[in-house]
Image 1 (cartoon, rainbow, N blue to C red):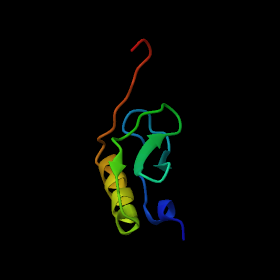
Image 2 (cartoon, helix red, strand yellow):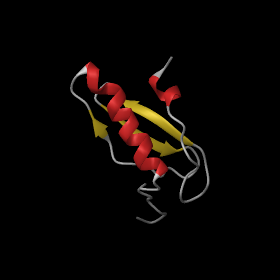
Image 3 (cartoon, helix red, strand yellow):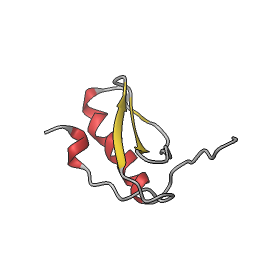
Length: 74
């Protein structure tokens, strides 16, 4: 099973869109909204053993509604 499939993501706190758990080139995880582009901070990992924990942190922060949104003109 893919790590991203292990976590349930709430809807975007800004627009209600679907969140997507993404891995960035094998060093961090973050969640981004597929509709408005809001996203969490990146959660880094250095060892393969810490990879799933980093993904879990990104999912937990997203589900708390702690996302960053860049509006038009910023």
